[in-house]
Image 1 (cartoon, rainbow, N blue to C red):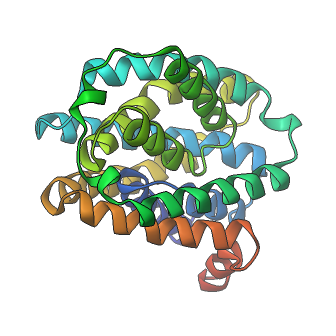
Image 2: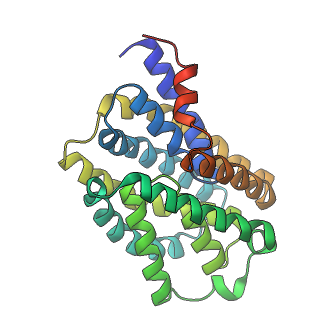
Image 3: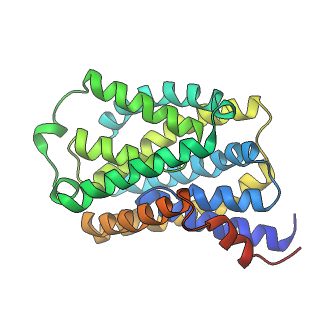
Length: 263
């Protein structure tokens, strides 16, 4: 592994860790860099989970230290997501990725409408919802979100935030804390599936993890310090950028390649 490859992986990881902790969609960058460095898409998808797991461990520790994480509710929401993630990881190689990504882009834009139309739902906590027990529909919802996360991970943060904010009533900072806990709990199971299918490059994954940890730590601190309104604007920006990429308006992979230094 060259110095340039190491720098690219760490820099990409830092950006991904920051974006994923505040919003989601950062895997566009990590998957692009991993494929740019020569990994097949399936191997890049599996390798990305190494950094994702450690990144979320860092974020969870930070959010918990700052006393904004509802661990009990997060674990209950994570259980169906874990089951779904294993199924999603197993079927990852059998689904048309382009069609799936376009569908995700549509959902992201719908979410953007909700964020812009009634921002108070994303900023103010609703105790009448947070105090409720987990419902059957929440179990079903987080099962399917987990399935998607196991499949590709890209953009799963948006779905989790929607479920936690709109369905469970948490404001964005606390929702982000629960989000990273859920991803932390299901990622090892999805990663194991990719390991069993020999779709993980440990060297690239571990180097990228260094950057992810740094980015996640900075973002978790910034989220609490800046508040829910700041997180909301980060999410709006990342949703627009991600959707533009998935619809082919902006080719982030090509941009990353153009900025790279030849070996």
